[in-house]
Amino acid sequence: MKGFLLGICLLWAMLQRSHMQIASRATVLNCCEGDILLLLDSSGSVLNYEFFRLLVFTAELLRPFSLGRGHVRVGLLQVGTNPNLEFDLDVHNNQESLQRALQSVSQLQGDTNTEAALRVAQRLLTETYENGPKILLWLTDGVQPGDVDKPMSELKAQGVSVLAVSTVHGNYQVLQRAVTPPRQSHLYAVDIDNIEIITEDLREAIIKIIRAERLRVVDLTSHTAVLQWRPVLSADSGYYELLYNSMRKMDTENRRVLPGDSSLVEITNLLPDTTYTAALRPESNQNLFSTLSVHFTTLPDVLSPAVVSVSDSGPRQIRVSWGPLQPARVQRYTVEYGAIPSGDVHTVTLRSQQNSTVLTGLEPGTQYLVTVSALHVNGRESAMTVRACTQEAFLPALADLHLTLVERQGIQVAWQAHQEGLKGYWLSWETENSRSIKPSMSSVFLPATSRSTRLTQLAPSSRVCVSPVYSSGRGDGLCCTAERHTGWLS
Image (cartoon, rainbow, N blue to C red; front, side, top):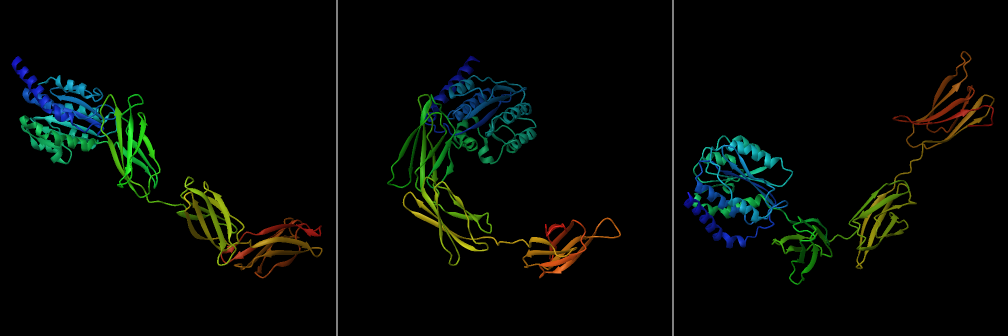
């Protein structure tokens, strides 16, 4: 037994040395963010030699990744008669700690109770507060794993990506149903002595799932770009070096140094419609981080005013608005307006911070030509012209209703009116009723040409009302009270 364990240790050391040079050149540091839960078959059906080869393979597979929150979290769950959580996702924050833990894992033996282990895996992967991508990497000999179809389907339905490595002893159809597509990159059946040949392909498949977009453009204009990244440093652990330049051959490279606790930067004074490349290099004495890069193309140049609109139109005023507002690039705005075709031209000069004004003193029902001009700080001028119409000045149908005493019991009713669209007028008033204390209501229809009429036998303090009549019905009218003891009635 001692000789066998010594052989295993020598095998581990030999495999570690054989990959040391490759691992030192790994370039996937800081590439990814997500959770990887290793589901390792540790039952008695797995040969002791195979078990340790799977551990060595796993250690090498994960070696290049940055570990911890904000990077890759790794947990190990062993499958046996009862599941054993060797270490949770939040335990290891660096490679040295993870590698030591993998070297110290002991095989459980016992039955292959994969179903029970998957219930634990579901809790670990779906109840965590982390919202990043999640991977279940199943390492197995495939021998009698049990009925895993339902728990695997539940995991996948909850967004977990399932990848599998089998040492080709078991049921390949079960593995095919378990993994998430595409099978050609998520399922590997390989002889245990040649398992290292799949390391790069499987690692690349994992990276595609959990690759973090570390440096991205979150806001872009014709002259500025805002870059954002997931922080990997702190104020005390280092700084960032930002390098950027356009893709034009003659342009020089720009350099900025940013504090270690920053995660956002705005690049200004860029050229419009130009492609730039930016590189962000985390500098730290504690860890080695990959340089992050991004390419972007600024928007075409837009000179204000690019849009002019008219609103709040009335009979004698309109509001004119324009954009985009560019106070840093514009000295002043000028609004010129005049009635079409030959009205006087009026001019309003406005500050660069203003993008709206109300034009007043206009003629009702008139079309105006409005031009908004901008004088830019570089001396360029840009302008845009629109047509705008004021509303018609709709006068009230009735105005100035007067009641005048003309006889002892007679009242002259007169009013001002605008005849357009009117069919006539409806007059109503209260008359004295000898048979009743309560006055009676009387009414009469008058033609549209009427402007006055005489009423008699009005009741004391009678209400006299005149309403316009349209083809669609009666409109709102005017009323006055007839006080017969005054020369003028109101």
